[in-house]
Image (cartoon, rainbow, N blue to C red; front, side, top):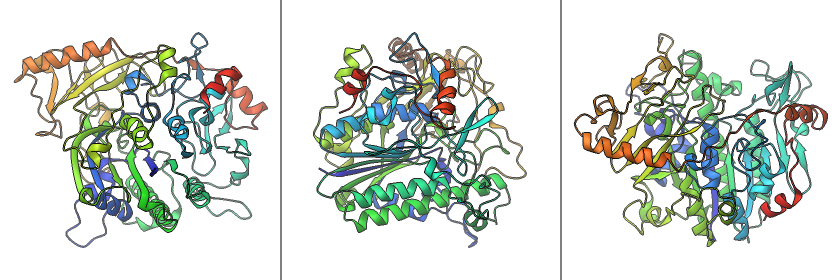
Length: 547
């Protein structure tokens, strides 16, 4: 069986990778410098129409569960949230009765390891990576943490840390990897203190997995990077490398991209050195588009796509992606595929490659939605000329704050060459609502700029339920979503809107609840100021989940 290395970048903008940029004509250094990523994309298969959800946790829930976010999770609530009236879905992330892809792979004989951001549930032992089929994990539970102090969220006035390690001999807060108290973006070399950038800690863990792997067994490794998610932090020498960029946010973002590229290059070199590469499929993609929000806050860019993270315009859900590795047939290398593929399609693809049935019997017994995944390997390998995926629902939420709970919505549909977006009925935290969508902007190739006062959140577009003001785009003819064809194609608009309404009837929409005080109590009393699982769960339930 082949080795599978899945690399998930965080908030990585369409325009923040070199292979989506034009070279400079005057010989000046390019803003974006990602030579390793570019070489891997050009030597493998570029997936030009790869789609995910617009926010972190739902995309990750979809990846591990094989479900469209509307059937697993569209909420970006924090992992300390619970709803005690629902012991299956009343938590952040993936419901406990859904089977993760690592469980299928482990059943097939794979050694399963994960490194990096988790963000699919923390409340109980049933949400632990162990219960999802992973035999080891080093990473953090939340959406993000500080790259130097590992802190995120507070309990009262106290900043809490988030870095956990789990393997055959240890399961608990990674206190041994803590930096000194003075270590920060501003103070990267404090006297007599440890000060290691978190992404290096994660990369070192990836290298350890690869170095210690028994080559007689197949490897399934998920490397879930922190980069380039905020906070905008990076080792100083990489920031200095981009000193020619005068906007500090863009400088930081591109320095972070360059650092990520370097780490990826080192891991690829190690895969080749250990002779894993020749029998490996290596997958790379982002969890959502780059965060643009407003100049002066974020450094991402999705040019020439419209919008970004938190938006259902292309810049929020169509992301950088490619597959490479020795398993890619020679005839497929150096190609670009423009068929549809989604983040949840890897579930069935990997199961097929491992020779196991991806059917989730446990979820079915609990009355939960089945997986929505499609095996893409025949298409990727060249055995089939066309992608088997021709349409999919676009998820949305009624949440009134980025990390709040809400109801699951079908916010649109991509079918054939057309994309329909429908604005929500009520108000949203980003200023949208009442059938409007925020971030109706094209940023430009060099953004943010010091002279720019653009605030994407304030730029709204009406995407209503009437053809006259609907948002229906031919995304092959008009990938920048400039000209709606709803008024010209009212019958198609009406048909796709009816499909959205029908899909809405089948969404999974549990109440995830609010912050549970037990999370803070245990973080302090049991874990020494670190986040971790905080609710008990029946041992028999965990035993059923663990393969």
